[in-house]
Length: 273
Ligand code: BTN
Image (cartoon, rainbow, N blue to C red):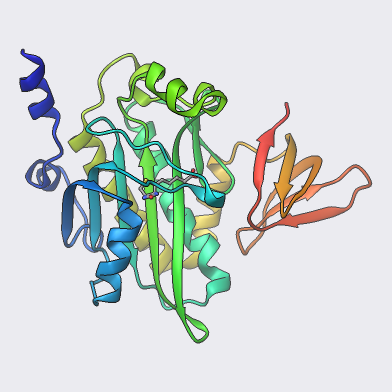
């Protein structure tokens, strides 16, 4: 097959995704772009204009992809998954962290369905063999005490080359990997996207029908941190301790040497053992 034919065959296609998708809410409407600054930003514009819950934005590349804690997200054309999905749950902002776990669970399950042992590192990094293969950026808007909407943005390294990751990200690139590299074969991006969206719809239903506790339990089953020594960077301070797991609000609890438990809301966590 010529390189052009293989690129065309692998292009994202709403039709090919729909053929393999099974979802009630997620992906009710799908927008697919060649390039956007950030799928989260594109979806935020749609949300402000009244887009329905489940509206999904996909892109072949992002010129200003965003990660957590103000970092960028490397988003080369035609090789990975960049997706954002809109939700309008009737919850308050303090319940949003647990709600956002539906995205980490869906990515982890989609990665497992290509045969790789995915685990979740708080809050929503997806690791395989301790290498980061995917991340979640949850962003919300509020009106008074209620969430107006939540955007769950997901980036998954599917077929990106190792050399490209290292060139773009340096040391962080060495701590990352693509599913192709780990599985030893090309990943079908349309099939993976359909699988992710289907799992996201399923976890959304679990959250809606059985509420946060069932979701938290599933998340804890995939958690890689609990019981391990970690280093936490939050609000300019750094400390080490042992991860105790997540609380009912989705915050990470870490025990410091003196036995004091600290709650982490938005930091960066590194595994030490
Ligand atoms: C992280 O691990 O820091 C989160 C990365 C989230 C990246 C995705 S790609 C699709 C969506 N659009 C963005 O700009 N960011 C998220």
